[in-house]
Length: 402
Ligand code: EZ4
Ligand code: CO
Image (cartoon, rainbow, N blue to C red; front, side):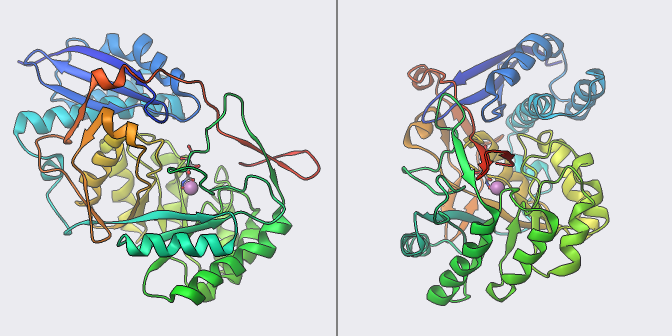
């Protein structure tokens, strides 16, 4: 019987930091899992190296569910982003191995295509409304059928989601960037900004917007109500979600659809949001919510309540996560949309993936497993760089949610 012989934690920084787990079996089959947790990368690397890798050696790589349960229940300390990202990496790597052993792409193991391709949205942004409109035009020309729109709020230095270089990257400094926040300025500006996008481009594409946890429930209710005529595909993370019940208040006031969950690590973070039908899209991802095994469980629960999927897909989730997400997305009945930001050129030097963009959709690799290869020689060129995500302060200096 095949055994897990080796598990290596690989850290590289091609454009940004990525942590990867590579599992090798006694038959010489390798599997890759993403273990990147933006701004806290080395904690997951240590969790894997110091605590998980010794448990993997000698295990049967085919027993994916058993290994998931072993790592989840066996830690005693359940959930949390570090633990769940580590479990995700193992789970994803084992699905990669299972596909290679079966000689099938992972989506075939998950039941095969439930649709032709995976609808994606990308990020248009601008330092002001005219440059946002130019950026939306660019994404429309590239063939995107869904576009997220963010613009800098006048007077608010470093508003969330405004791209400076080629790829949006918030974790750009060696100490957390201190950004300003004013709810009043945002609520005065954002609805008009989204309306300007609809006025210019009409309604024949999906328009999304990320509030990035900045509003209270009643403020989010007001925002959602004020943009109803823009017919957003969703407003994302309108308020922090530690208190799932908070979303009931937003729901009571607006028909603007709600998406939440990019920071969630398990089904328990989203249980009431789903079963009480307080949201429309769940944004949990392969890398942070327990791998393909656990994310499928979340998606299945969601499907019982007509909640659709809309997985996080920022560039701090590696091409391994994107490949795994596309394999899962194409199979689930309640798929909604997949975020797709693209990657820095250097990232593609390290992670060779043949996930393909065509006509506003992503198509999975047809190669056995996930279809991603890790180029160790290229990876060695890019040394790990300590990076932090920014923090946000209100105008009076107090801390706000970033
Ligand atoms: O801020 O992935 O919808 N996308 C997002 C992202 C997150 C980053 C954090 O690491 O909100 O841009
Ligand atoms: Co977001």
